[in-house]
Amino acid sequence: SQQGEEDPQALSIQEGENATMNCSYKTSINNLQWYRQNSGRGLVHLILIRSNEREKHSGRLRVTLDTSKKSSSLLITASRAADTASYFCAGTSGSRLTFGEGTQLTVNP
Amino acid sequence: DTGVSQDPRHKITKRGQNVTFRCDPISEHNRLYWYRQTLGQGPEFLTYFQNEAQLEKSRLLSDRFSAERPKGSFSTLEIQRTEQGDSAMYLCASSLAGGGHYGYTFGSGTRLTVV
Image (cartoon, rainbow over all chains, first blue to last red; front, side, top):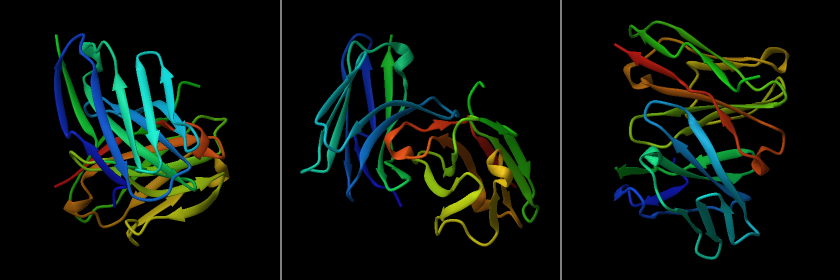
């Protein structure tokens, strides 16, 4: 079973715009991670935020975590066509990563 | 070391046949994970190893599935008597111990099609 839900399921934007994806999870977590997956390929780790952190930045990525609401968001600024992919959040509980169902992001040139 | 390698990339098999997949993790990583992903869904946890010990198995891992990691290096995932419902992408990942504090490195996956 999946850890939680991601919103929206699909997002289409123009190059240069910002993209925001949200994730909600059900159980307590040690940290929350975001991954990207290009069609038919493996997942690439983007960023990890620990349960005692509220916000983290990495390049054009900004992640927030609200443990009281059991939710996280991923913001990609100044999007590029190459950002087109599926994005998954995954919560860590113990040694297991539990993934959401993902957001399909399409960045139109 | 160029990352996590999985072999084969694609496998088409007839229902009822046995299949085996291989995963070669990053050599410094002592944890290895298997996930299964169906179209349009996020990956689902199957099992993980720390070194050669299989420490956790999902209920998804029926008795037709078996995974090994001899000598704590590469791992194999075998599916016996395949069924059409086994068609999916099988992903392997590795991490350092305390993997919850580090990102996992995933392989490109093995896509299984059962006909």
